[in-house]
Image (tube, rainbow, N blue to C red):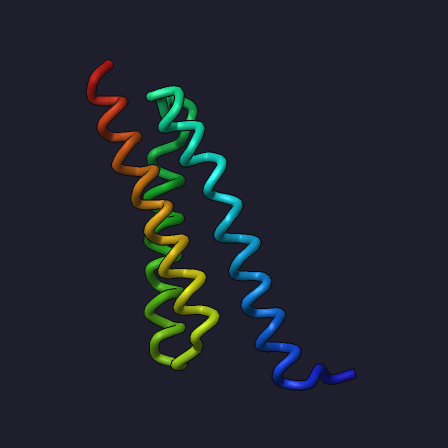
Amino acid sequence: MILHLPLLTLAGYLAGVLTTLSFVPQLVRVWRLRSARDISLTMFLAFSLGVFLWLVYGISLHSIPMILANGTTLALSVAILILKLRFDHRR
């Protein structure tokens, strides 16, 4: 069964919201604890690069759900990376 395009678009938005919001608790935790010691720098660098490339791909397709989700996820991921570098540097 093929989904109707607006339903697929809705699924895209919902997927983007859910995957993007999953980073908020991690960002809040790092901020509150002032520590990101348990976060892998290599993983977050690779993840951020991957999200950036998904954002570029979404822009090339003019896909608003991909652009919004990956743009926001990239911002959250980079924020976690910055906090990790800042807090790890202090130790």
